[in-house]
Length: 145
Image (cartoon, rainbow, N blue to C red):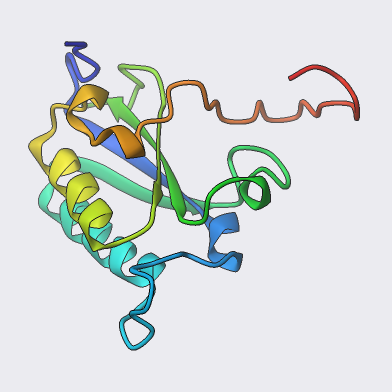
């Protein structure tokens, strides 16, 4: 078991703002319920509010242009632990896609326990090969990823 949060006092959660424009797939057939984004943001806000040094950020797609359009529906997050001075203390962990209430509960429970071990997330929410786009660096069409 990896100790991703060793020395972590807090965390930063980056919510992909690009995902908001795509269908959520949230609890198929539950049109009368709020969408996954509303439920997820409410859950994340509660966890951040109850944490010592948690921060919630909404940004454009951190995975690169058009990345969200080519994957399974649902919201994506990036999570990085930090020390008391907000310096990163572990690699960034991609989490998602978050598609339903059980995913929202799993992610918020995982953040609230502050262990930050990706092995404690359900397998469907782990994305070990997915990396955030490098700022200022764009891939040329046809180049290898």
